Amino acid sequence: MHHFTRTALIAATLALPLAAQAAAPKPVYIHMNGANMFLENPVAVRPGQAVVFVNEDTGGHTIIGYSAATGKTSTSFDGAVAGTKGAGSPVHTYTITFPHQGVVHYYCSVHAILAKEPGGRTVAKVRPGVDGFGDPMAGTIIVTTDAKLLADNPKTAGEKILPGYFGG
Ligand SMILES: [Cu+2]
Image 1 (cartoon, rainbow, N blue to C red):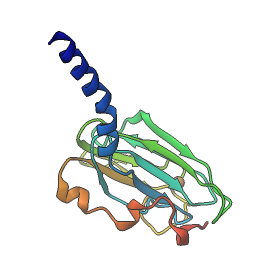
Image 2 (cartoon, helix red, strand yellow):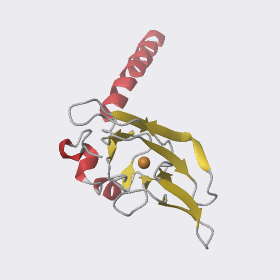
Image 3 (spheres, rainbow, N blue to C red):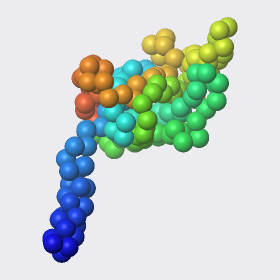
Image 4 (spheres, rainbow, N blue to C red):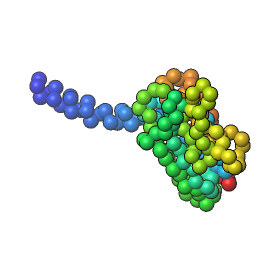
């Protein structure tokens, strides 16, 4: 009996990583190009699900988390992605996961600045002199288990490379 229990325990332990792997959701992709924006914004991800920032721009970008409440930037959510030569060339990516549910704000420090609103909240604004579509290069990630929010992501968030999105 003792022996059987031990064998069962070992079998259960071995089975765990496989089960976890099978359940691991696909990453959520957020793309950048010469428009100096994060294309998929906002996105929702599960706790532990990978968020992959893909740079399809010829120029580089940073991806830095910040607290809207305090204005402090994150030391753990702090990425940089170099540019690409274009379609068919390698792209640089930055991958991060978030263990807990919540709302995460981030911005690109090359193309946006952080500023305090009159109410005290910190928001990202277009860095003066930066070209683009007019919105600041910044975004929000909702870390949640809510199925409806998770299903609401843009279609492009499911693809690593957007063939028509290289540029700049
Ligand atoms: Cu940027």
